[in-house]
Image (cartoon, rainbow over all chains, first blue to last red):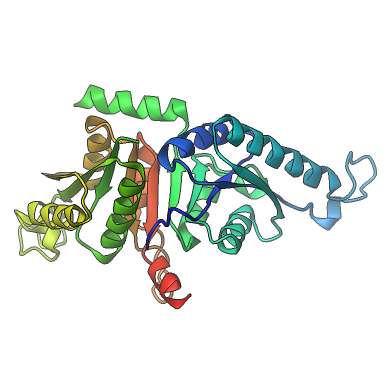
Length: 161
Length: 148
């Protein structure tokens, strides 16, 4: 396994502070690498669509939100000095699988995720998406702790030392 | 990025992680730190019996860290080997802090196609405990890369 410098990095973005932090850290860890900002959206189960009183019908609002987030992620990457392209994917088999499929398609050199991973119905369990991505990835995966988490862990280590 | 810490037990996944760490150090000009940890003897594994893995030998971690460092030096990198003993996850996370590492790189056995084993427990625990970003290099990736 090698991290080929010409290969892009996949940045998982969900609009959270953790994901924004991961972008800034990725710039530092993998400088000069172009990025694909992935935002996955999970389709509603058919049972919910068209239910009377339910505020949304169909998947359009979810998809639109993902498109908006992917663009926002690219803007943030651009502001951090990363050349980025947005990719929006429907995660009909879970967010992790969708991210992995994009990474395979783009032949990414590395996948970068915040500790919390992506939002979505299946990622309510903390870190479950990143866990699944790591388990099935065919390339290195960088998991970036949030700034608060990194600080807390560092000071806990220093206190013990 | 100034410092990369690669943790190794001399296993094949750790070798793959070392290659990735070497690539990243070359790409970024970062210094490389190689750490090997001798784990405490576990009851039920024979107590004070003979070591099963090289890393369990008394001076095993020194040898493993030095061998990995020598390999990285061949790539023209500035490398410092470190060896210690204790709880593996704790030692690695503490070293990441004390060495001022910007990135930690570890290998993982990942999902074996036959065994169905889950993500290596050390790499998984490091994601939960490391104060710095962790790059996990899954061993199975080697087979995928070889096949493509």
